[in-house]
Length: 98
Figure 1 (cartoon, rainbow, N blue to C red):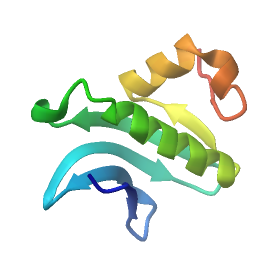
Figure 2 (figure 1 turned 90 degrees about the vertical axis):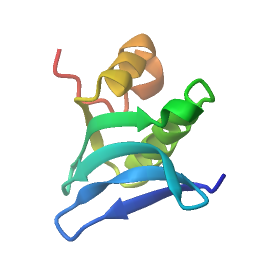
Figure 3 (figure 1 turned 90 degrees about the horizontal axis):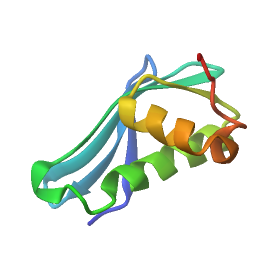
Figure 4 (figure 1 turned 30 degrees about the vertical axis):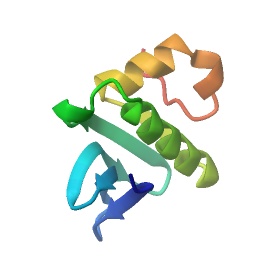
């Protein structure tokens, strides 16, 4: 399994992905502006579910947000649930809309 890769187009839209061979096995759809990283959706291949890949993507996204001083708008149900479950862990980056 390869490391998490960040893929962005010229407009700041893209994803964090984990690729095994030539197959994308997990992806987290995002967009980035000067001050904010929005997470839309996280998906893991059905054959790879339960192996912690979503958590690996979450960790990569959080590291990127912190390194670039970005606030995270969690529209993705998985990311929102993790932020809500562990607010102290993500309070520095969570743009909490609740």
